[in-house]
Structure formats: structure tokens, C-alpha cells
Length: 183
Image (cartoon, rainbow, N blue to C red; front, side):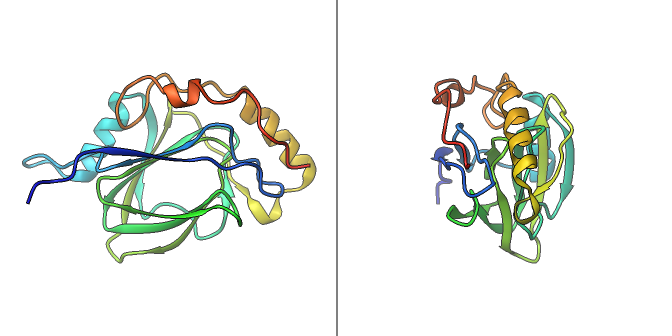
């Protein structure tokens, strides 16, 4: 049976309450990375991230079981083993399932939450240029914190390269300059 080719899916989320989400689309690279002969998929994903300058890497189950977002960096999540089901974009967002070889690229401000996962679920994470991440819980963010997060998110640069392909992030460069403010 032939292996499916890499394909790209996109999702766009406007503000959801005090969750800013992003003017940039969420990118889901399906079957982006495959393990080579004698190479573990975890190692292959991390090598792909590092080659494309998405650093500060980690390896674990990944994604917290409460809704949250980051205001200091964008995030890439590579599914190395098993599967995980996530809700993206807040309460009115979308549910997605990632499987081994998939890479999810979350723009800063995009809410994400782990709903379910396989017992062997394992991810690799990374951030453009190794940026540090913060953690803002959707249900605890105040209006002032949300406003401050929006300003910080707006100041972040578009990463030089896509973490999965290494190509210029054209979809982010061509995104609308503004989007709705949640209040």
C-alpha cells in the first residue's frame, strides 16, 4: 500500500471571548515527516524542526488538558507516536485529530486543548528561533491581560521558515493585516 503524500490543511479562528486567536491561519501538515530506515520518527521530527530554525524543543505527551494560548511565540507540534485529539480556537473552535507524522503550526494567541489521546501518544514541540513561551489559560485571562497579549502577539515576527517544509510562510505573509478585537 502506498503511503499518502504530505498535504496541507488550514484553519482560521477569530477572537473567542478574551482569547485572541490570530490573523494567521493554523497550519496542519498531514504526513509531513516519515521515519527513515533506522531513524525514529521523534528524531526525524526534531531534526526537521531544528533544520528549519524551530528550536527550544521538547519531547512528551504534549498539549495540556486545559484551554490555553501563548502570547510570546508561535508553536509547532509534531506527532511522533499515536494520536491526539485537540480543540483549537476556543469554545467555538474546531476539533482536530493529529496522527504520527503530522505537524501542527499554531500562531501565537491560538487557543489549544487536549481532549483525548492514545496511550502511546508522543509529540515534539518547537518555537521559531527558540523563543521562550508563556502560558495563558483561556478561562483565567482578564480583559487587561488579553489586551496586553494582543499587543505582544502583534509585535511577533513571522518566522523565516515553515517548521515542516522549510519554505517561506506565504500564507502568513499574505494574511490580512488586522482581525476583530474581542472587546
